[in-house]
Image (tube, rainbow, N blue to C red; front, side, top):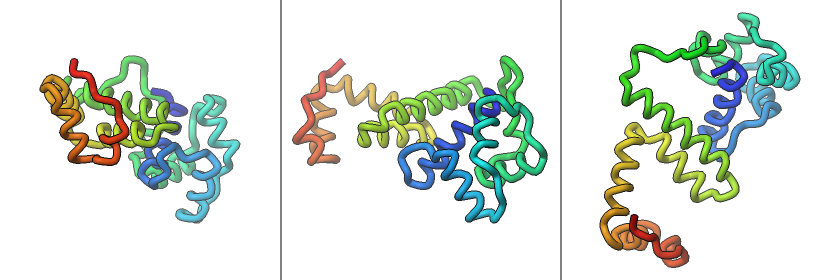
Length: 166
């Protein structure tokens, strides 16, 4: 992942953590840094970093951004090609990929708040893979999805089309 991709991802995560249900804009990040950390960074500088025009950060900027996004300063560099951490198990690496995929899906479906929220909730769960396996089991049980939806979300169940079983 490049530094620019990481910053865009951090803006998405930060926006969702702040209840925006979308990524923070670069300008919102600039304002928040100024207000919360009482330091300055320009929106154009953030844009240049994200677009790869500035591939390296100064130490001051790296510390500022890592402090704001609450990540280790070492995270804010381009990953070498083929990079992966040996500390993650194969399943955990797959789950991280799955979580990122769900977050990207939530962003794509931001115009459908219920779907976007559901995808983000899946991504935030500590065992995303197990949640999806549960969903599979529910869908394999005839009419269970419709019954659960009617009980857990009655307003959605009344307006939703019947869920077809796989």
